[in-house]
Image (tube, rainbow, N blue to C red; front, side, top):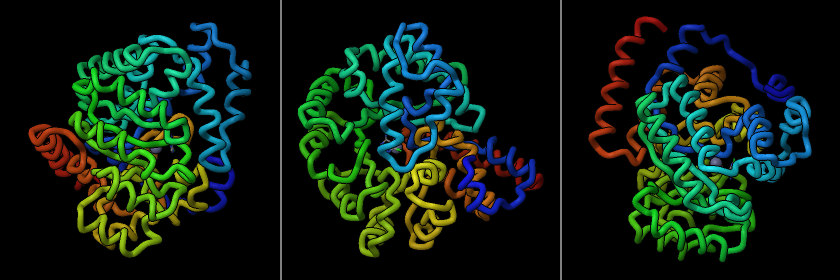
Length: 354
Ligand code: ES4
Ligand code: ZN
């Protein structure tokens, strides 16, 4: 927690039993950038292993970089550190490290973004990245019983030709991908620029999601729905500025993948209590809780649930987010049914203890 968090977010005492219950609660993670799980320790280890020069030579030096004024100041560090990822094994190790932490936080299913344009710019092959991540998912699936898949995310502030090129590359690997997403610096890069990319990805059978309304306006959320046919909106915070778009999200049953600690750290909101998650709930919009880039924002998904508990969300409300995460995932119906049963079992065993 940084100083301003401590100053602005009164912390209710939640019991150790509640904390533990929130970690054990079966859940899906629907908004997670695998490159955002690169912990500083692993970044330095990979830099050594791959002989990549970074401007920081100690952990403390690197850690001192982790205070952000906005999305761009975070992205600058995030993209720079991605240079240490060079081989399929690196991507596999990164995925396994994430799945180990996710498993400890009760994650049973994970839909995971990756940013191929950045790795291509670093001189890597598309297949190296995809193969490494898939191997990590396969091994993690065996070890932890976590299901999931990869969402190829378009880095919206790179040249459009670079986005078109990864869609070309994805064509051959479409069966290995779950979906297409849209991320990075939002303002000035509206969803309308990516209509053709998304239409091609949709034709390959990929699910469509998009970051919208993180720093950008409600209008970008509307564009993501109308032009990209987004099935979920990542963040969506600024949709609350438009009654019409908020009502539409509820009516069309479009879930928001919200990321409390991310929004706080990147100053999308100045206090966790300003996150409009309850206002969305009150208006019938399905919200989920996710970790975004947990190595950078001070906690994995369990810490995001705990932070909401600390500002007064009830166990029932938090259960609602977890159930939404399963229902609004892209898992098949059989897997959803299985996960909802696991959830029900957890609830029964937990109710008397918290
Ligand atoms: C991101 Cl927090 C956030 N927002 C937009 N794009 C991203 N890529 C990785 N993290
Ligand atoms: Zn994100």
